[in-house]
Image (cartoon, rainbow, N blue to C red; front, side, top):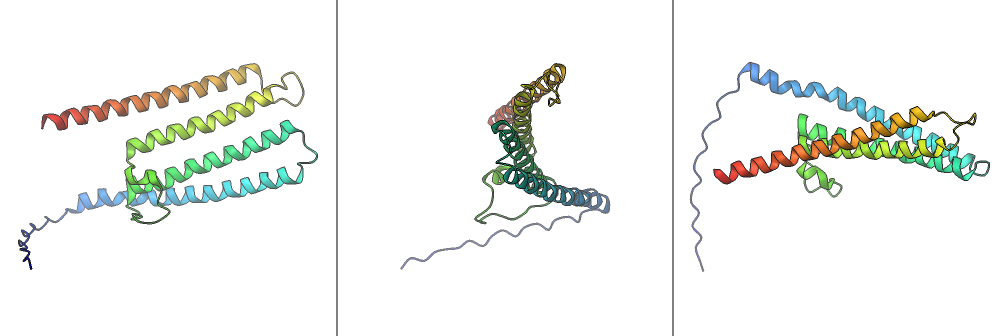
Length: 194
């Protein structure tokens, strides 16, 4: 038999009371709650839009051309990607800026949520926006094949601007990731000197 000695833990010092103004400032984070509830309502609207477009696809699949079906499917993918962006903003933003969700151990906890912070959230959002822009640009390129016909809603200038905006999103995402990497390496260097 071995006897385990347990050392008494040192008593923790009582926390000083938080003043009224700091409590007010810290509590103001709850003002974001209606914003996240509004995004949940927007998510529900996107579900309805998806179901409407899906019903349209199924109902008219025998009358539509392959190109028309592809455009509707790309529209469905676009709705799903925007919905994914909403989930990232709702879950990640709430967890980062309002309150912990306490999902650790839950079988459906998103993997990315365990290491989410404002920096990771910015990069994930930038990548999601690029994905959404890519799908939109692909739809534009498919529909732009109809330039000169009455069915086209795009001009060459409009397509060019959409490409330039997409490239701006890509450059912005690269810039955000680069600044984040510089910030991380700066923190590692500071930690190494301590």
